[in-house]
Amino acid sequence: MIDFTNIVLRANPSIKTNLRIAHNKNPPDKFVKRSLRLSLYAASALTILTFFLFAKQMAIVKLFFVLILVFPISFVLILAFMLQSPKAAIRKRQREIDKEVLFAGRYLLVKLESGTALVNTLIDASKSYGVSAKYFKEIVDDIDTGIPLEDALENARTYNASDKFKRILWQMVTVLKTGSEVTNVLRGTLKSIAAEQIIEIKKYSKKLNSLMLFYMIVGTVAPSLGLTMLLIISGFLNIKFESPVLFSILFFLGVIQLAFIIMVRASRPMVDL
Image (cartoon, rainbow, N blue to C red; front, side, top):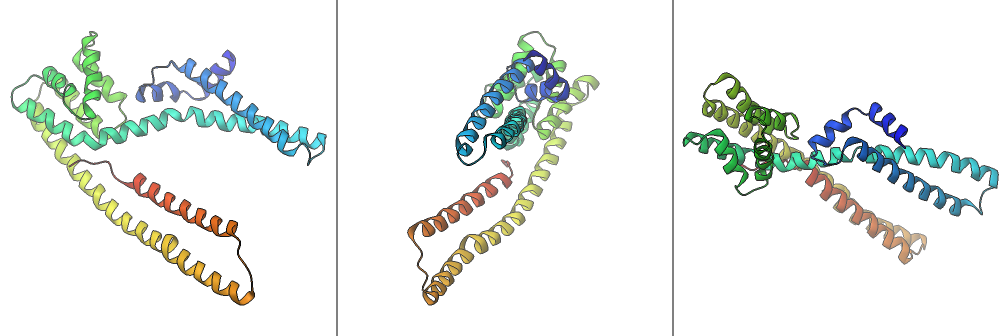
């Protein structure tokens, strides 16, 4: 297991960085070991299930070769899926931060313009309401452990999931290095982010029109007209549709509705103007 762990870590050097960005507390070797173990269990269960499904339908020799193929293929696919799990957490953190990044930046700007020191501004932001407070608290916790302010901001920028939030942190790091005025730079960055979010909303509006057209055709018009024509044709041909067929059509329509909802939610920009 240790050899496999080292092989996986060497083949996927981004695992350590992704775990840090996702704020997964597990060390990379422990995460890989856990992924290998779960993949082994899942692949074994799938292989056993394949054996019971085809034991009476295939010869023992053919079944043996099928099982030899099923186990490694399923193991590799499941392991690849498990290793990608930090990226799902990163996307979740990105959407959380992007939703409130403009509010968080404006909060910092107001505090700094009122004469509050940068460290105290970060402490106040970590105690404010909203999802962004926990991300500022991570910076404050690093400072409390003795890490210099500039290094804490640099680490937060490097291992942050949101590109917009990285830009705000980068401006703070640059100001600390150059000693320039932070409010003017931060104000310009926030205006740029607000303009980008407005563009994202406009793009979403255009995309939503296409999705609504797709939904009207595939989810409403086609099923209603198609089912009506099917019933008319079946009446002429004296074909009877049993309940399983109708329930299958209903299930298919439900899948379309669910897919449309997922598409709309996935394409929605996470903005909070």
